[in-house]
Length: 251
Image 1 (cartoon, one colour):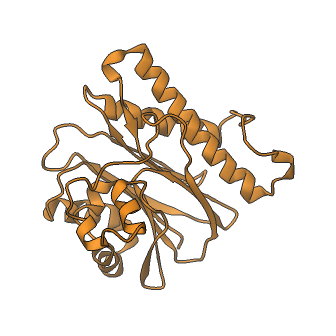
Image 2 (cartoon, rainbow, N blue to C red):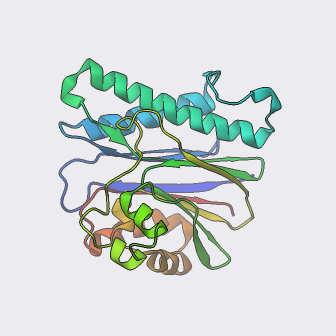
Image 3 (tube, rainbow, N blue to C red):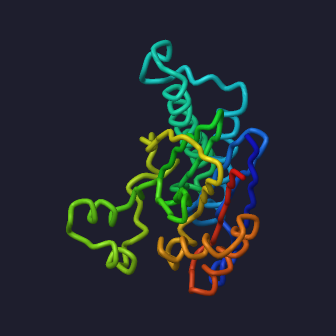
């Protein structure tokens, strides 16, 4: 399967440093966005460690023996999702070990959004509030659910999605890689169709732009221009965070 991908990251108009990190590996079909957190440059360290760990597990020789399930009884899709879970927990371990070795980095962590395309299937895993979208048949579909306090409140019916975009605690995470220790990533597998467009992004994009705005931009611009345009639109609409976009297109 042929895959095209473009990516763009920007510190944004407020932050001096960029704590986001991303990976685009078209040949292997692996795409990652991580949004780090922590003072003293810890965020950019955490996100870089996480991306490297995921790449090592999913594409390298690291064998995930420490699984909760009997891998002999898994089908191929289940095994890949278990590798995603394992990769994210290995990233969490690596981040915590780095923080323990240097107390100045204590408390650092990162979000992770991972897309692996193999054999006409897309395998997804995520922790935190970085997101993965699918634009298909002129409609946008959010494929991930934020691990945040406000998302829990939305699920409980105590907060509307509209208010969730403006409340002060909108970015408090209930899970992050590294800071929260062992993680329980959401994973899924779905078939890939010709023409599909996947978008991985940090919350620097989705804070100022809602899903309708993202859909309209996808409708009116070519896939090869989307990463650049989405980042620029986020900046124009007042993002206060780093912005990272990876756009993956199946022609």
